[in-house]
Image 1 (cartoon, rainbow, N blue to C red):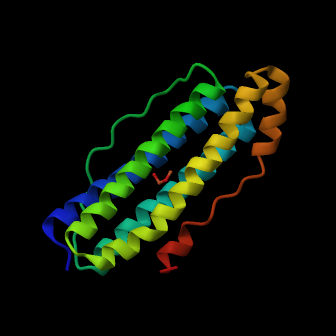
Image 2: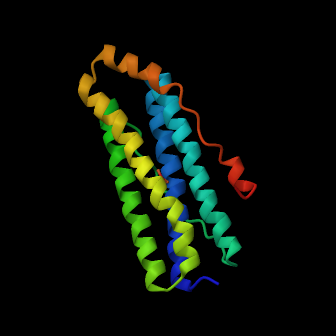
Length: 173
Ligand code: OFO
């Protein structure tokens, strides 16, 4: 059984994960608008994975006899100054999410809720990967200084990313 405080915090994170998906869809639209299909498809894969994160919280809340509560999702930005500006925003967002996950883990420890603490382990590790994958692209964009040739090359490179399928999570992966 989840404490009221823990349930509220888990629901808040579930909604943040949905916002993450929303933000990455907005970034995908920004890149599609620039005809950068590789960047757009990378962002769509990222958005799909964020739905997977939201589903993990959803399933966990019900496994612990809680109730999912959806809140209003803020409108994400529509434009960024450049591809590197979009990836910088994405990196900052991932750092914020890592901080939220760490705070959730601290709360679980404070509450002696070891099941929730164990559940969050996956997210703690995932955030290392999330920050690193965004930072890798950001560093390359900085290296090519958003030059058309560099962006064209990166667009090709990013087009190969495929999402880890969130549908697996619905089957209790
Ligand atoms: Fe991008 O890791 Fe979830 O929010």
